[in-house]
Image (cartoon, each protein chain N blue to C red):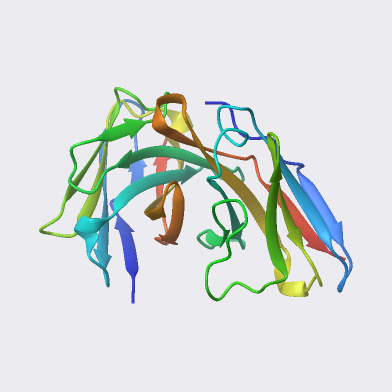
Length: 111
Length: 118
């Protein structure tokens, strides 16, 4: 049950785009289209931003998009806004014992 | 409005026990799988356990297997996590979360803090 690998930090200026990666294995990210992305502001509960690799829940701005290539999933935030500054976590279904694994998280800073 | 409200956290000594509860409202609780996810202070999210909609199937992270038990009472619309043989490394905020599709959590509680310390 090793955690998925995310960069610890990412940054961009308002209006720019930033992409956060999430690397796993063929047993999780690469093997299934069940990758989710969560946004977490300090002291708050996580919020679902992307599910099943690229689907967006209602209410989430279309500035947020997801994709996957091989064992790596990505979250792209376009047109960065100050309120996008938060921690972002990926998660994936893993076929190993029908479990779930999270990434270590990426702190997104809007410069 | 969907709501998940955790309770039962607190300070406990190493080796002790604690039972967390998660009260659900605003949706048909018995129709959803539920999960517990924890977050140690300043650290990332870690999946802990899940239970299917009728309680007949449960899974655990290796780090808590044999010490934690997840359960649910659909009549009371409540999810539980019984935590035994607690260790310092179990110190975390524990969130309950609803699963809306495979390993997709659309609603989370506000979390309850568990501190294991002597």
